[in-house]
Amino acid sequence: MKSECRTFIRKFVEAVQKKDQKLAAEALKKVQSELDNAYRKGVIKRNAASRKKSRMAHLYNVTFAAAAAN
Image 1 (cartoon, rainbow, N blue to C red):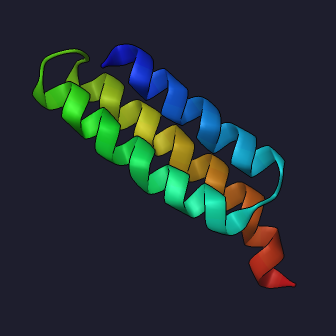
Image 2 (cartoon, rainbow, N blue to C red):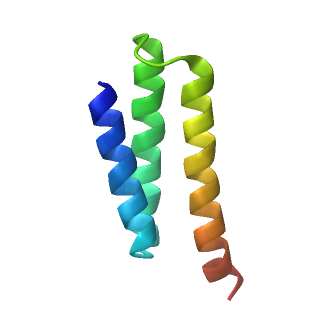
């Protein structure tokens, strides 16, 4: 479960680095879902899941906000 979360986070970061907004949006949804599942199963704590979700959302917004503004 924990390694699956790391895998999805890695895929999300790779999509952001490639500047692929559609793929990154899908990956972000999947990351958030997996982190919620990991929290529910007791693999990670609530604040850790929340912190990681927040950081991923911030990375997405910072990266693609400039593209939306243009």
